[in-house]
Image 1 (cartoon, rainbow, N blue to C red):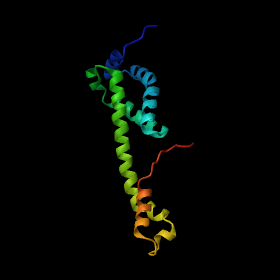
Image 2 (cartoon, rainbow, N blue to C red; image 1 turned 90 degrees about the vertical axis):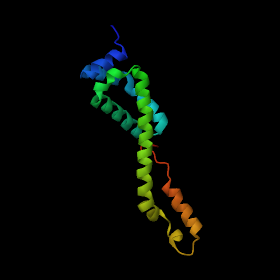
Image 3 (cartoon, rainbow, N blue to C red; image 1 turned 60 degrees about the vertical axis):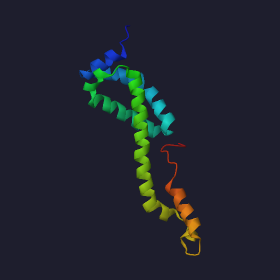
Image 4 (tube, helix red, strand yellow; image 1 turned 135 degrees about the horizontal axis):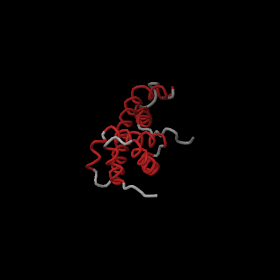
Length: 138
Protein backbone atom coordinates (compact mmCIF):
# COMPACT_ATOMS: atom_id res chain seq x y z
CA UNK A 1 0.00 0.00 0.00
CA UNK A 2 1.36 3.38 -1.01
CA UNK A 3 1.30 6.20 1.54
CA UNK A 4 0.33 9.63 0.38
CA UNK A 5 2.27 12.64 1.68
CA UNK A 6 0.55 15.19 3.88
CA UNK A 7 1.23 17.88 1.28
CA UNK A 8 -0.56 15.79 -1.34
CA UNK A 9 -3.49 15.25 1.02
CA UNK A 10 -3.69 18.98 1.76
CA UNK A 11 -3.67 19.68 -1.98
CA UNK A 12 -6.51 17.23 -2.49
CA UNK A 13 -8.47 18.75 0.42
CA UNK A 14 -8.01 22.17 -1.21
CA UNK A 15 -9.83 20.74 -4.24
CA UNK A 16 -12.70 19.46 -2.06
CA UNK A 17 -11.63 15.81 -1.68
CA UNK A 18 -13.54 14.50 1.35
CA UNK A 19 -11.55 11.26 1.35
CA UNK A 20 -8.31 13.20 1.78
CA UNK A 21 -9.93 15.21 4.56
CA UNK A 22 -10.94 11.97 6.31
CA UNK A 23 -7.41 10.63 5.92
CA UNK A 24 -5.90 13.73 7.54
CA UNK A 25 -8.50 13.60 10.30
CA UNK A 26 -7.78 9.94 11.05
CA UNK A 27 -4.06 10.56 11.02
CA UNK A 28 -3.96 13.68 13.20
CA UNK A 29 -7.12 13.99 15.34
CA UNK A 30 -5.77 11.83 18.17
CA UNK A 31 -2.42 13.59 18.32
CA UNK A 32 -4.02 17.04 18.21
CA UNK A 33 -6.52 16.03 20.90
CA UNK A 34 -3.67 14.88 23.14
CA UNK A 35 -1.81 18.16 22.58
CA UNK A 36 -4.93 20.24 23.25
CA UNK A 37 -5.65 18.17 26.37
CA UNK A 38 -2.13 18.80 27.61
CA UNK A 39 -2.68 22.54 27.14
CA UNK A 40 -6.27 22.82 28.40
CA UNK A 41 -6.46 20.04 31.01
CA UNK A 42 -10.03 19.29 29.91
CA UNK A 43 -11.11 16.46 27.60
CA UNK A 44 -14.27 18.36 26.61
CA UNK A 45 -12.38 21.53 25.74
CA UNK A 46 -9.70 19.57 23.86
CA UNK A 47 -12.40 17.91 21.78
CA UNK A 48 -13.96 21.28 20.98
CA UNK A 49 -10.60 22.67 19.90
CA UNK A 50 -9.95 19.71 17.57
CA UNK A 51 -13.42 20.09 16.06
CA UNK A 52 -12.79 23.79 15.47
CA UNK A 53 -9.46 22.99 13.80
CA UNK A 54 -10.96 20.53 11.34
CA UNK A 55 -13.94 22.78 10.68
CA UNK A 56 -11.54 25.60 9.83
CA UNK A 57 -9.44 23.31 7.65
CA UNK A 58 -12.50 22.38 5.62
CA UNK A 59 -14.02 25.86 5.39
CA UNK A 60 -10.67 27.45 4.48
CA UNK A 61 -9.44 24.55 2.36
CA UNK A 62 -8.53 26.74 -0.62
CA UNK A 63 -5.63 28.14 1.44
CA UNK A 64 -4.14 24.72 2.19
CA UNK A 65 -2.05 24.71 -0.99
CA UNK A 66 0.15 27.37 0.65
CA UNK A 67 0.98 25.16 3.66
CA UNK A 68 4.54 23.83 3.44
CA UNK A 69 4.53 21.60 6.52
CA UNK A 70 1.05 20.24 7.32
CA UNK A 71 2.05 18.63 10.65
CA UNK A 72 3.60 21.85 11.94
CA UNK A 73 0.61 23.80 10.63
CA UNK A 74 -1.83 21.58 12.53
CA UNK A 75 0.22 21.77 15.74
CA UNK A 76 0.39 25.56 15.48
CA UNK A 77 -3.37 25.71 14.88
CA UNK A 78 -3.91 23.60 17.99
CA UNK A 79 -1.78 25.92 20.11
CA UNK A 80 -3.54 29.04 18.83
CA UNK A 81 -7.04 27.55 19.16
CA UNK A 82 -6.26 26.40 22.72
CA UNK A 83 -5.04 29.88 23.66
CA UNK A 84 -8.13 31.45 22.07
CA UNK A 85 -10.34 28.95 23.93
CA UNK A 86 -8.72 29.82 27.28
CA UNK A 87 -9.07 33.55 26.66
CA UNK A 88 -12.69 33.26 25.55
CA UNK A 89 -13.79 31.09 28.45
CA UNK A 90 -11.83 32.97 31.07
CA UNK A 91 -13.59 36.17 30.04
CA UNK A 92 -17.03 34.53 30.07
CA UNK A 93 -16.44 32.76 33.39
CA UNK A 94 -15.07 35.89 35.05
CA UNK A 95 -17.99 38.11 34.04
CA UNK A 96 -20.66 35.52 34.88
CA UNK A 97 -19.16 34.60 38.21
CA UNK A 98 -18.60 38.16 39.33
CA UNK A 99 -22.21 39.14 38.67
CA UNK A 100 -24.12 36.13 39.99
CA UNK A 101 -22.31 33.25 41.60
CA UNK A 102 -20.32 35.27 44.12
CA UNK A 103 -23.49 36.47 45.86
CA UNK A 104 -25.22 33.10 45.66
CA UNK A 105 -22.29 31.18 47.11
CA UNK A 106 -21.34 33.69 49.76
CA UNK A 107 -22.18 32.32 53.21
CA UNK A 108 -24.76 34.31 55.14
CA UNK A 109 -22.15 35.12 57.75
CA UNK A 110 -20.06 36.92 55.13
CA UNK A 111 -23.05 38.89 53.85
CA UNK A 112 -23.65 40.54 57.21
CA UNK A 113 -22.24 43.97 57.92
CA UNK A 114 -20.41 42.66 61.00
CA UNK A 115 -17.89 40.76 58.87
CA UNK A 116 -14.83 42.63 57.75
CA UNK A 117 -14.94 43.95 54.19
CA UNK A 118 -11.49 42.44 53.63
CA UNK A 119 -12.75 38.90 54.37
CA UNK A 120 -15.82 39.44 52.17
CA UNK A 121 -13.66 40.77 49.31
CA UNK A 122 -11.25 37.82 49.56
CA UNK A 123 -14.17 35.42 49.26
CA UNK A 124 -15.50 37.21 46.17
CA UNK A 125 -12.03 37.27 44.54
CA UNK A 126 -11.58 33.57 45.30
CA UNK A 127 -14.79 32.50 43.57
CA UNK A 128 -14.34 34.95 40.69
CA UNK A 129 -11.12 33.19 39.70
CA UNK A 130 -11.92 29.50 39.84
CA UNK A 131 -10.14 26.78 37.97
CA UNK A 132 -12.96 25.24 35.94
CA UNK A 133 -12.39 22.17 33.80
CA UNK A 134 -15.52 20.52 32.38
CA UNK A 135 -15.37 16.77 32.62
CA UNK A 136 -12.69 16.83 35.31
CA UNK A 137 -13.10 14.04 37.80
CA UNK A 138 -15.60 12.05 35.74
